[in-house]
Image (cartoon, rainbow, N blue to C red; front, top):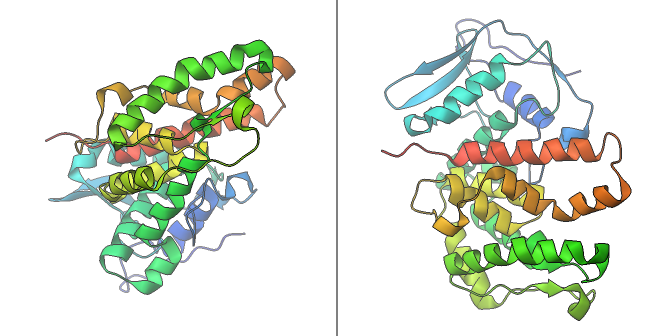
Length: 311
């Protein structure tokens, strides 16, 4: 049973998100202390709803979400403040909390989880707060961790030509190749891929030059975009899918016309082999259908996080 703490009147005017947001984030998949994928979404933890009113308050520089007139804070105690340029995100957060029923399930607050992480990661690293960094991660370490997914990228592994009567390999060639070429153009480096017929079970590794280019691209991301990229990459096991989401939704000059594809197309790319497996062998009840929804929820939440209105 999750125990929540409210500061007494006169001591503080906010719900303690050190308790609330940590517990909420834990049941909604917030990765602590190390960056991780969906986290505890598969657990049975729940949180009982204890507030009656949810409001979105706009001030001179940001939006703040309030429960019963008390502002929310992140797990590190920072204000859950959304920049005015991310008004769509702020209103989606309002909808996320307003839509909650009496019992909050593990996947109920994906946007809150990601937003809290972006705010806390920015605070910890810009303030060089070692204690906070141990909880949310060091930016440079997160980037190095994400670079590993470029070696094992889902979109850089091609199935045997005869598997599924050749239909899967043809789909990979038709769908993956144009995306790979566009990402190579964006990064300015050539991507190494695995051909199962030619390479067998050997590992894949990008060149030092390509890794340096990819690192440079990641270093240019805002904290909002980096957290969105992290979520997509860890969910899809694909660095390229992370690039696609950020390039399709971010407004910081990161867009690339040939990479501006829909979120549903990105989800399809990430799960192409599973599509062929289920067509051949059928769905596993409460597994494939849940994975289908989880994938799209995580991709859409990440896309919403990095979306920013143009000035």
